[in-house]
Image 1: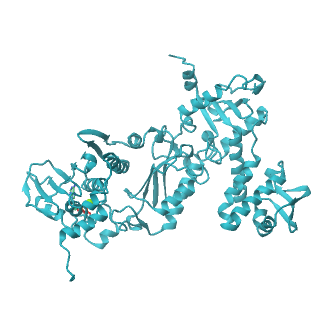
Image 2: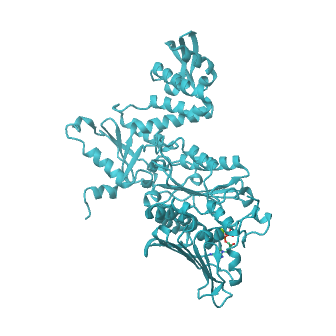
Image 3: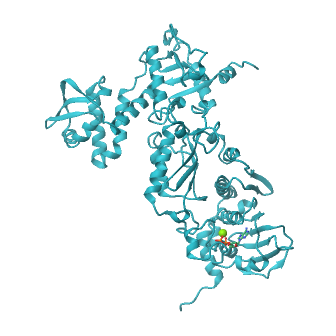
Length: 601
Ligand SMILES: Nc1ncnc2c1ncn2[C@@H]1O[C@H](COP(=O)(O)OP(=O)(O)O)[C@@H](O)[C@H]1O
Ligand SMILES: [Mg+2]
């Protein structure tokens, strides 16, 4: 075949291969155009999952009749005019290929009117072939109709899924747009029925409502509001509490200058920020907006613009990681202590976007439902197990003095210990239940980390050095990593091909059985030391140590010991969850207790 230039329609159909994958991608492009045109309201009508019809009507600036043919020609755009504009593009579109691509694979109509025109106009295109522009009544704004998507591209049509599935994809895109543009009203109807309605947000406080409309109150009742700026970057939005992590990564929304993107740098930074507080295989939920100078990010990397490239990737990574890490760290039990300015607001109670807003404490624990279920489970224990001996009454306990409630510690004062596992405490809000083991483990872990990152883990010599029989590999590892181990407070010497002598152990762990401790550390060393840098596994190492030290279940604590644990929790970062992301305490408010007993009805 001789070389020949491809006809326009074919060129557009090829481009459509990249830009138009399914009805959802058409909706995305058309709604983005409406937003770029300054629309305050967008109506999205779909039939049969969008395959039969997509009609999108907006109240934006509109298109002049003489420009209609241009709008649907390839590489024609009103959004950029030079490479300089491309460097700092602020609109969602700029490639000028969505309308011609969509028009080449559907029966397409574009109707519009600008404020300067007395009447509207309409342009129809069937499979890429345009009819002349006709006068057509239309309010100021634009309507795009896309019928019979892919009717002339059977290969694509075969890839379309069931109506519900296609509708689901459309709704997911719109959810993402609804989160990014809360001021815009979005109405979605399917087969003649209104399926979603995002009402516009007029002031900041209403943003929470919009987030709840998009993601549900499960998200908004268990997240932290974030707003932090530094080094020319700003990160704001909401991150789910670790205890509200999900089994899939289905609620992760990240926007760069208002554009939804998937980015490896971002994903990695977020994962790392949660690394310490999330159970393996769980995924955090978040809605985060990164704002930066448009020149710092290249958006022209992907035809559908799902990806971006940061000029200063490491800076962005560090900024996101630090911001989230600190926000999550301050999600400590009772939220006592700490700099108020660096404390995230609990969404339900605080002003959005303000770190300094006073948090509502009860939002920190589990959602009420789960808390009550937990309580019910506790209370529903068979009578034989709940023998009176199991309940350690607080003999001579000093309940919290009502007079100075304002100064009372957030987690209150211990009343009793239950089943050797839970601490019951009374605070200003009501009853606090603490999982001793989980709480203590977290506290020790955070202390070890702080010590390691500060002056180093203090070490205490054993009165009599302990000799330990180990495998040759373990002995080798201990020898090879002697310096690192010293940094964790262990002094180990080789005493033979398969023997070590333990000279000192970390002071924090001095009460424990040194044999079990060292063997566990060696196991960690063997697992991580060889394969990847020990550095990366350092927190896992400390986590292993912390696990040893924590109060084992069934240990009877005295009231002063319990109170000391509560005070430690209040002072410890991340103490709202144990090292595996489970909650360490729950709050049952007086109102919830009343409800349990149907009081006041
Ligand atoms: N809903 C709309 N309202 C006003 N103008 C629009 C609308 N949709 C498209 N246009 C105009 O048509 C042009 C081409 O749109 P499109 O093919 O999506 O390319 P791009 O968005 O990349 O510019 C846009 O630059 C804009 O001027
Ligand atoms: Mg566009």
